[in-house]
Length: 359
Image (cartoon, rainbow, N blue to C red; front, side, top):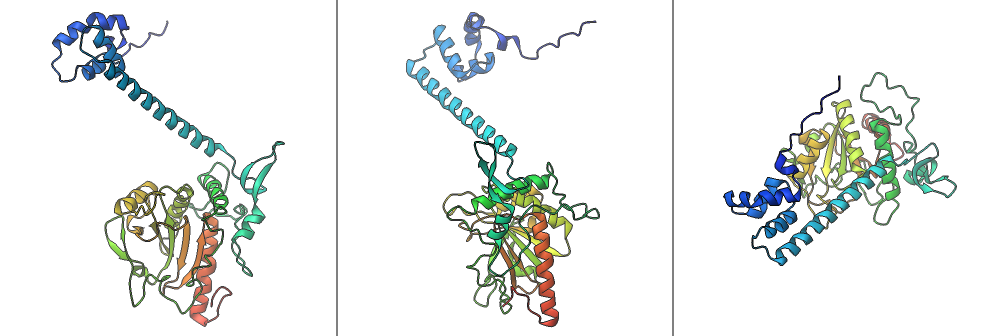
């Protein structure tokens, strides 16, 4: 038995031809009680405002040529805007499909005419992130030989997984860090607090002269030393920063994996890439909701709008600045950094033995 065609739910009047519109337009206009016949006609017959103007003029309504030309310009603006939006969407989808890394490159900048990829190799990525005379966790491909079977939140590093998508975006961040105005250092050379075991100021945020307060997503004014007694990892982020999106997903997973080991605080640096576009509570609340972060741990900074993001700082339970990094980090990297630097700090606390990065 032939399958019956489903009936259209669109009213007949919205499926009429122009001639049919004109045949019934006068009767419609005579019964129209609204204030804007153009808007009413367009809505009733399901046509554009320009079509409504032309058809209403045909049945005798006083429509000037200026009105028609203005409506034509408005429709052209709308069409241009939609075309640009479509182009941006297609470009974004194309970027998501682009292979940002492979077994040789941590970031693929492009391909030669012969199809050979070029960019930043895994070895170069590690060298870029290393301070002279210092070893840091490998910035190369995540080690998939490590068995995290007992950790349901651990990153598998498999292509196609969320973490692999994050790794590709973080590879983009590495290449961007080589451009003017960005830092390619693993630790910020202009941060004198890093490794100073006499400095417990949380990188200058808590001193006898001042204490820096910031508002969180819940509207509370908080200070960083409210977490004294715990290790604190701060992630600097901004909504306009593309690499900050996968970075926030990493923070989301770690926040749930180590609830009693480390406090993860996200600091919003700006609302947009514009000059001094300061974030506020709404910025923090939106970011927390978007990535399901603990709202009390997402704060808005009024003095960090020019900071390069993403960026990270690790503080000791006493306020020492243990580690600083500008650029994206994978979940494995953060795990390694936290494991190493917290162990070094606890050894120093218990025995006074200083690690190589301390002074």
